[in-house]
Length: 106
Image (tube, rainbow, N blue to C red; front, top):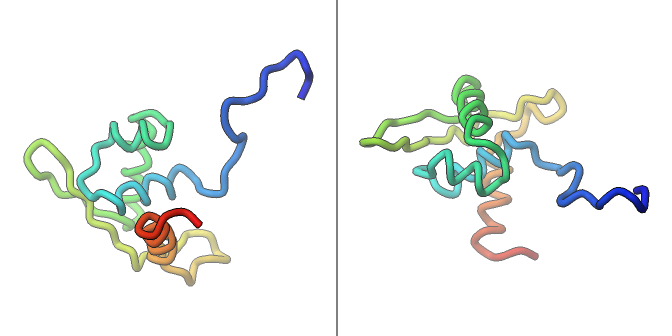
């Protein structure tokens, strides 16, 4: 970077997409609020709503209205969308990060 320009606050890219991060937040807490997901991963509530809609439409989750809140139910047997990973269920991703959450970071 040029010495005149400040360093970016965070990484310019990451390995996980926002869709993956939203899915993982819902896996951690099926009753999580859109606002909490947005703050947790650093995107807008509207973006989270759009992603939840995408995941719902693609069959990765369903929504159940419970009072004024949503409860999400994941379909972990749904496979990844990219052709080279289409034979792998998203359960693998969820399990990998659930295991990390239970046992701490390596």
